[in-house]
Amino acid sequence: MKSTEPVRVAVNIRPLLTSEGCTDCITVTPDEPQVHIGSHTFTYDLVFGNNGLPFSEIYHRCVAPLVEDLFKGYNATILAYGQTASGKSYTMGTNCGADGGGIIPKVMEDVFTRVEAVKSQIRISFLEIYNEEIYDLLAASKPSRAPIRIRETNSGEITLQGVTEVQVKTKEEMSSYLARGSSTRATGITNMNIQSSRSHAIFTISVKITTAEETLCAKIRLVDLAGSERANRTGADGIRLKEGRHINSSLLALGNVIKILGGNERNKKKGVCHIPYRVSKLTRLLQDSLGGNSKTVMIACVSPAITDVEETLSTLRYANYARNIKNKAVVQKQKPSTPCFDAMVKELTPSNSDAKNKTVVQKHTPSSDYDAMVKELTPSPSKSESLPVYDKMCMIRRMCSKLFLSLRSHGLPKQLGLMIFLPPPHHLQS
Ligand SMILES: Nc1ncnc2c1ncn2[C@@H]1O[C@H](COP(=O)(O)OP(=O)(O)O)[C@@H](O)[C@H]1O
Ligand SMILES: [Mg+2]
Image: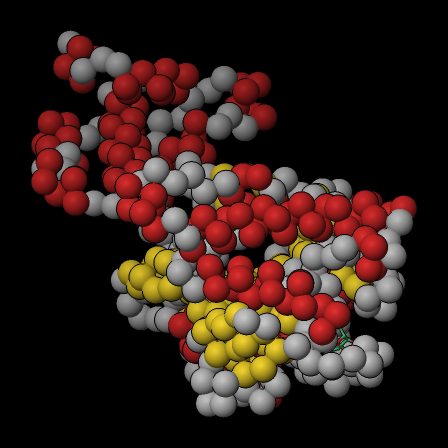
């Protein structure tokens, strides 16, 4: 099942901090998800803080519906976006602060309440993008904190080579991994935030639900971005300055992707738009979340302080673009296994002893009617055209493996396995 829906955008206005000692620059229309800043007015799906909805409702209004959909097999993303010190980590709960609040701990609670009712398996991963490299925050030890490489499958799916995925059985276990990863995450002191995140963090919970009919495999990504910053305000120099440049350039790439996906309607209709996901690792990892296979909520975090008015306005503009992004979430059913093909691959891969002895063991009985089998496996053109790409690939794999096994049974030597693509079968039989 497919669900096309726009990215939902909530704005979260944090309270003024005592250290800020200045006035508010942002107001909210009573009972409307609308904010005013200077002469500008923006409307969103939800607004929290500054007499909008209370912050305590953010989970219930923004996140709970996505967790519900996760258990129906839909991928989901919660993305906290905004300038440095606007409250992203506080909102997401990655700071593991004294009050233990925030979205991620509540997602954990919700997930474990729901898993009681279904047969399921939960896995988590936690990574950060620091100075444009991806690091595994759950890696067992420091030496294995080598950067992780991005791989793209033939179907365009982004995967991460060697990232730690831990199976967890309790909420407490999951929390301990969040705390462990958060403590490993790069943070530092700047003039604007004493616990400034110096990396983008992505905490992913993957759920595998097995019912009598099907197995669903979906994931929820909880993203706490590092905030954009101006060096003259953060006072950054040396390492902090270099970090700040990387943070800003990846956020610029993210902003461009959001702007292109959310604007330029005319170009999009003409199909002439190129989405520059490849410009940064952040945009590549968020490819599915923005314009892809995910139900996504962006939480635009802003400071109400008059001193932050420029940054707040910029965040609100991008958040406004994000509302126009259309995602296509698809129920994530477990891909059908192809035992025949797997058996073939296993057999084609010579084991050490095989290589030494060069003995081929025949395991398959000859096929009785080769042509009938080919006919049975060849889809009619109309049927094949209506199949999605993945199903077509599976079908071709099944066909190839059956053909191969049949040819083996007709005496084809193991080493010539790939010749199945060349001679017609009657040549072999003659
Ligand atoms: N809703 C909120 N209520 C109270 N304090 C908040 C809230 N949001 C953020 N803060 C405070 O603002 C400061 C910056 O928040 P933080 O989450 O670290 O910002 P960011 O991750 O965007 O850089 C912290 O001291 C945090 O405690
Ligand atoms: Mg932060």
